[in-house]
Amino acid sequence: MIDGNENILVWTPTYQYVAEKIREKKQLRFIIAPFIKRDALNELLNQCEDTSQLEVIVRWNKADIVNQVSDLEIYEDLKNRGIPLYQHSSIHLKMLVFDSNWAFHTSGNITKKGLGLVENPNLEVGAQIRLNIDDWIEIEKLLYGAIRIDDRLYERAMRYREDNKLNPASLPPLTFEEETEKAFSRLSLPATQSPEQLFSIYQDPLAFHGDGDLYASFVHDIALYNLLSNLDRDEFFLHLGSNFESHPFIKAVVAFIKDEGSVHFGKMNGWITERCSEKPTPYRWQLKPSTNRLYDWLVYFFEEITWDQPKHSQVIYWNASP
Image (cartoon, rainbow, N blue to C red; front, side, top):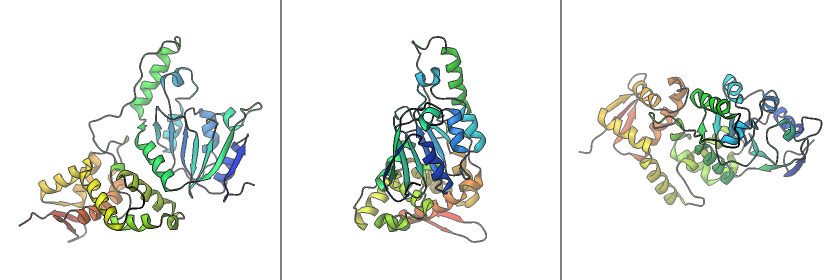
């Protein structure tokens, strides 16, 4: 058994290590690799009891697709399991990220030869490593730079593979881009409950390693608002407030509240839902926690904004200066 508290090298077959870590209830949060084959990916997914936090990132450049070093059909498998798939054209890294701030960085792709699941596998090596806050921020940045694959982009990739399979030496351009009629994502909203909670974790991140969801929310907000290390309280809130207030989504929300004068929770939640770029669009109930957190952040940084709960629904107000 591999000691879960040490940095250590893991040699072929690396699959045994990964399966062991999944069985130890270390939830998978990210699978990142240029090449991902359907059979190998399903070997990993079949070990997972809980994939609710998992996201998969693949390269899928035009040569990868036509030469079938990656299987496009992983999109269908992941969609059926409710797992989002992202495309990032620049990745060369191969990494599995677990809960509890551990990751496995490996030389092998997510293929049966790369994981050591065939008779003559590739000779690969990986390192079990503890993640720190800077690592999580880099992972968040990688995710921000990726394109969420939906049915439209999947079908485009499938057509490209079919149209060019007989002439792989001379490939036309292939681009992935998200639809732009909806300008924002729920990733544009703060994930921690309040700015004060964010600063509390910022002061001592190690104390919160044991709470995976809260720590992930902290990392999300640090990356979203581009906060540097070692800021004192005044510097922290100066940078946070400036970056929060200038974020395009926040500016749009504030303009909406100002125009309306007052907005009940259901209307605000619906307005945010309608502007989310995720495919499929989140249900309104899925965004309620994000909207609730946003109220506290808006009140913290905008003195013109208040909210109360006169009956059973929160109402947010724009209070014009006298």
